[in-house]
Length: 341
Ligand SMILES: *[C@@H]1O[C@H](CO)[C@@H](O)[C@H](O)[C@H]1NC(C)=O
Image (cartoon, rainbow, N blue to C red; front, side, top):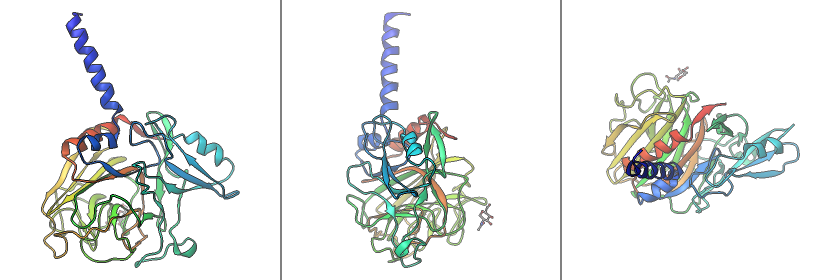
């Protein structure tokens, strides 16, 4: 091999290595649309993050333990959970925000639609072992949401409000869904009540077709913008929003003044498709938006608790991410090698 091509090969290896090393939130930061919330029970979402990913609480004595990545930027140290929870059961009590803004998620308080089945009407936490997977061959656990479970933070920092731009992605189990309302991840009301059209901007995943639907029988990635699950501008139907068949799905919803988009793909291979990219729904209340900046996971904005699904990782950004950055994030997710355990 000529020395010049050897140099090119070395440069290529370095470029590849640094691309792999850049985690989703490093990539969003490089696009000037930084993560303002980063949640995952499976891995660090910054290449340098070594802090707690989530907290488990065990049934035997009520003690809690934080689970961290094995190395900075790495996969969750699930063996620490396994030994802490040995011969008892554990639930996930906190999903920490890796962005440094303390936008942590804890079981959601009661809302206008429903009180949860937990104490004082709070939603139940997820079983800590119900969604085992591997990333790059290493065992980790997702957040398995059944109806009555859900997480929330009503007192956030840096999350978009009003008509400010934001992006969201989540990696979900494409085979765990229902038609209840609403398995969501994203921006919602700070009051736990339905305060009107445009007061939410969250990813919805499932086959609820009450407000709108995509092609086929679902499940679909849609946007919960409050008082509607939207697959596109027309709330009734968007034939370009496909039924999802992947076991692991990457779901994207992003919005800015009078513009929003839905994107998605198989989290284990290939790129992201754009399922909608255009104007806000023409129904009154969605342009401009009235986002409030709370964060929900597994529930609707008014604590509707009939949805189900499984969440592995997701972020919310400040600013409207470019397709280019999202495509790099998708490549990083594929490199994480999600697989069934
Ligand atoms: C949603 O999917 C489930 C499972 O395939 C099915 O039983 C249910 O009827 C579907 N709901 C709707 C509204 O299509």
